[in-house]
Image 1 (cartoon, rainbow, N blue to C red):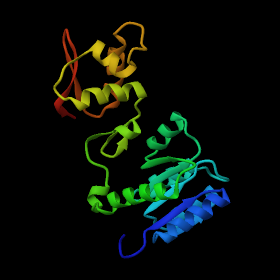
Image 2 (cartoon, rainbow, N blue to C red; image 1 turned 90 degrees about the vertical axis):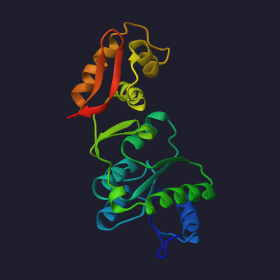
Image 3 (cartoon, helix red, strand yellow; image 1 turned 135 degrees about the vertical axis):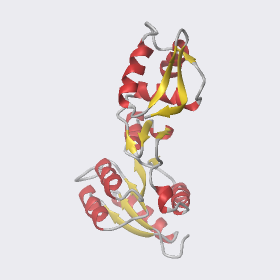
Image 4 (cartoon, helix red, strand yellow; image 1 turned 120 degrees about the horizontal axis):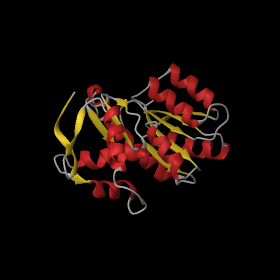
Length: 228
């Protein structure tokens, strides 16, 4: 732990959970500000810096997602763990798309939550200011199913992202349309393989660089040296 305590924002509306987890955090040396309403959390985020926010989603006032958006908009150095009973895949993907660092499903062992917090803080504390800024160029965040260019999220559909991910991970390799269909839909797609051509066309419109090359008679590849 660093010399001054890490500052934690803890948003949780259930009193017992809030009190118990706050006590564990304080006993572990953290400086904790615990609130039960999302609008109160947003006011705190706007007024001060936190090293880490632990956010429930379903809370009174603004929900946890609104707090997460506020953090990403104005406090990018604040790491975020979503702590919630919502375990459906759609909600988890939404959280990662909004730049959450982790997603923990309740009920959770206080010790496990503390370990997850420790892991994230160890990673973020070791970064310099430059490293905390989004990397330049095209970056894929696999855990969040999103692609960024110069730190800005690209408006890709899930199918477009999976297509880009497949090509991006093996630059120079030529993929057939059938291989790309398998990477996106597995064995669930029934139809013409020209659907890949439509996805590539849309993907090229959304990418700020020219990086997907057509290999006539075969398929597509990610260009090792993309151009603007």
